[in-house]
Image 1 (cartoon, rainbow, N blue to C red):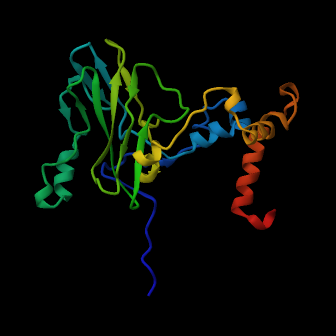
Image 2 (cartoon, rainbow, N blue to C red; image 1 turned 45 degrees about the vertical axis):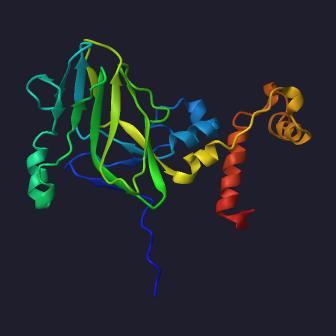
Length: 257
């Protein structure tokens, strides 16, 4: 009897019809990385591609006067005071499909939180991960944002918690609309194995206090990394990126080496 397949590492469930589906994050940060960084900096391109882009289900705007928050969205006729707001027409659609015990519990789309200038925004998604995997929700890596807001980061244990996939937005300017575009990633979801952020793992670190504390092996590794390629003026651009890519090809296809 064949063993049961574990399924995908991450499965996103779209609840809002027409919302843009998540996409694998891009090594070029959606084409916004400088050309030199894309060609020569493997650290930047690897970070850019780590995870999935999650988009807002509709374009909308927020405005904060230092006290109250108002909001509007594509197709709205005006600005509205924000307490807790459903996605337009979604609550009726939810109740049409949901089992009877769940009706009336559709997630809000945007909600002003008690903290000044902080708004919770729902992506229109639920997510489930493989056992022992979580999702780190953070600002899109290496994609510049329009000014006016920051994102809180959070790690959600989505193998155990099956609820709305949202982010918390902190508005940083007042009396000016802050726009969110449905075609621009709102946040990036990055899968993490639970073991990598356990206290036992994170408390396992050490620091060396000065140059004299470096071992012979440390100096040998530094020489291999920095000196082997020659003086900085003569070091070819992207030599580290070339080495990392060669090693990945070797690991993926050992027979090629």
